[in-house]
Image (cartoon, rainbow, N blue to C red; front, side):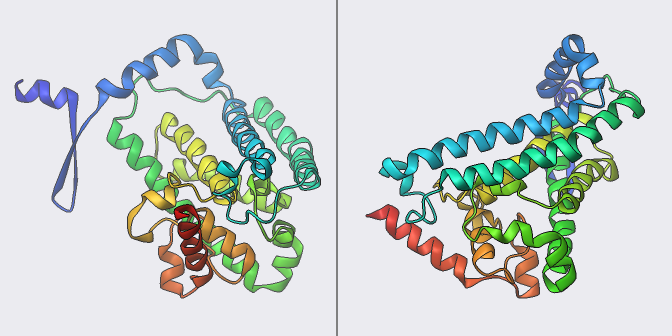
Length: 291
């Protein structure tokens, strides 16, 4: 394969004089061409990002809620719960689902109608992002969102009025489960939605990358609150404890002045707000799974 043909199939990304050869246009372009050919009108609709985020969230919480219902009678599931001694009740499910439904009907639905009426159709470029651009775009948006929410979260715990007015509702549950993810005040819901929408714009991401980040953000947010410590959970796969995950976020609900970062661990390390509570839970979980 000559140099020009090689460059057509493999892009080179240089960071600190290190090159990563990744398959580029050959990977995502056929997918993007298929979407443009068959679903262009849907993708151009201002409603599409909202429908994508809501459907992704509902699918994930439905899956975890089924696990919560089955866990008390299925030891193979219950052994992975962070708090196996505290089953999720129908009252818990009904209360959190009620606020989620209220927020979507009162805030999300009107915002969706406003988008549909006033926002112009989304421009769709003919070229797909390269695989490097897609993956690093999602990573960059996740790092930026993590920093933004860390500051927001820290302020809403340190300033009593902000905590009581906006954030306290989320801490009504000391042991989190998936539906607690969006058990939020309207202000917090809009803050999270704003950063999720704006960060790909700030980083000049392709719309496919923006949608990928949106789905990834909802997945890891739900995983943070799911209440399970699975061996395949992201925090058990990312090395050096760089990823927070469900165990560290559960510790935040136990000790609210610790573990403010939503995803990564470095801001809590640097600020000295890491909780040893999380490490004790993780150790207990490993011992429990080893029995």
